[in-house]
Image 1 (cartoon, rainbow, N blue to C red):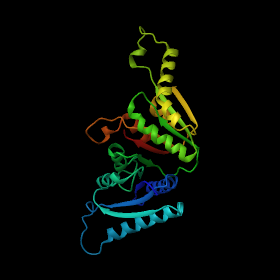
Image 2: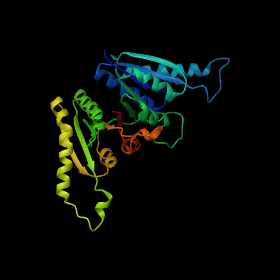
Image 3: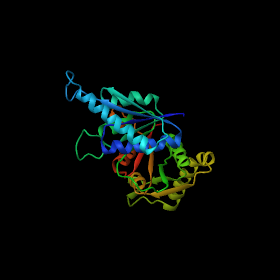
Image 4: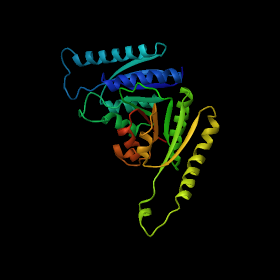
Length: 276
């Protein structure tokens, strides 16, 4: 087998969904699967006596391994228990990874949060594709959605999306969403909407041409629409949404562009963030 998919596990429902998603992807990719549980002692400050935390962590890993093997009996699975801060440990692990998979939120954090701090941190920092999985996604649609724009930053996302569609035998819907500039609504400025639509269609067609030639077996839908990108990408029933990351900030969330942040918060399916 080639490639290594690493999954962060903590026993939560999103974590279990992430293990199942990763096991399926490992079979498709012919990759190995590594389940990683990070034991963070700091909140409890327990180091002496019977190591109940380590014992509980071992049970979490064992349950995750059972989930993976039940889901895909032929997958090659290994486990690791590592002490430290979850986001830091998983970032170190991702240096070996073909893909990093995490649940949308773990057992910690705020009860009403849509996305956990660890998944957001990894999506903004990791250099390999990061897949954030939500629990409860059962229905299969046979379609993958990827965001397309006029920058080279989306090329890595397109490559990942075409590969996933090819492995799954799925249709790939490439969405290029555009909006009129703010000053376009000034009454003294007129715009030819037909001309703008044609220009936006050309942007998508040119960006996709090379990938269409490389993956001729992948059914491709060029979906160019006037809409907010987050609404367009999350409004389609699909199995996976793939986005690039255009962030350029020096701190956490700013390393994710506004579109990728919005998609992570509003998507109803798994989301892959692929940094250039």
